[in-house]
Length: 591
Image (cartoon, rainbow, N blue to C red):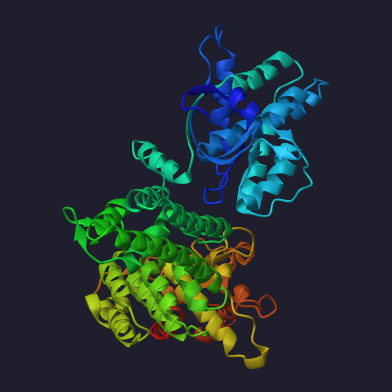
């Protein structure tokens, strides 16, 4: 295929295309699909169409030559080509319902079952073939990228279904002809080594890529530059392609995991954890400027062989880090304190340390990792209650991760313990924060404390204990079982005596100006309890005696014990609240 301006129909007529496995899977969403279809619609409405529709620039590398055709790998442009074929496939099925003969377009854009014009990445190709191209809607989407393809078909078919019977068939045919005649700029090379060089230059000039995509391109281009032997070049590129194939498949397998990280965050945490902790080129941070940093590190190597070996090791280690992140996310169901970081919503601070300690803790029970996680959760809780900034300690924690190279965790555990107890006067500030009159507004931290306390109460009952509430229970966002922080004495009570109590004036100390009970006690820790959204809704503004009726409650142990703090079954007053607050503070100090 010559490097020039062609039309899409011409290149489809004589060639076949494959998306290599090291490329990202199909990723367009409804917004991009609608822009694509709006562009076609706008072009269709032009009175004069001498100027062809422009589909973009494509980069291909030769995969297989045959006497009658060539199969190409799509190095750049797969999203646009895949979308064009998806759209035509849906249009053809739509036209078939109008009894329009479509076989010539099907042969051109789709091909026959034995030889498709376009093959998706291997994990998705069977689904792409049957669901997207053939319209077999009984095929089940199993992977996130297959669900993307399914959603794309649904978006396209919804747009087509909105066209009423009055829409002329010629208008729909015009879209197919527009794509058939669409102009594209093609760059074709004979090897993927050459393709990486062009891709690096093409995408280093304004095209928006993720940092991970930029790094992949740069590393492959660097292999092309540094490796003088052609056979070795192809071999090293094969290793990189295999590692990035695994990285993208791991990313897709994490798509449905709550709290998942995006690819650039994982890349940044990997650099923080494993690459030299230094500033470069005018005090730049490597994690924030990954390509520049890697280029800088490569420039410090003595020779090209060292550079090639470094690139190979980096890609392998990076692939391992993506797997570690997935393993950590899955491990939350086995270890409560790991899930606690997600309940607190302060996990980002600790990711480099979590990655590094997981990597170095080879023990099957992960005991060192667990101890580190417990201290991270303690620091996250205490620093938040203390009113410290959310990034407090970030530089120290990054250094701890970067400097950890052995399986001896003793110094790390000692330093983390000191952070939790003495740094930034955290011990004093923590106790003061627990007494904060408006602690209710620190929702995540209060929910965390009440969750841990609820599970502590449940565990006391031995073999009759209820199952522990999980981090998933605490982070669930929908339904009546969503966990909420509720007031025991409500903000707007229905009981007149409780309404009177809220407005009662109280002096905490002799000589102090009185304040309303509402200001002093409503939002403080002792007046807060864990409840489900459904329980909160049904409980509503009921008076205290109704809330603690034994016939009503059995699910939340922390609600069942409320009567033990009250001197009067009918009243939840400042004495009750203070008694419970002291109990919760005592418990909080042990977390």
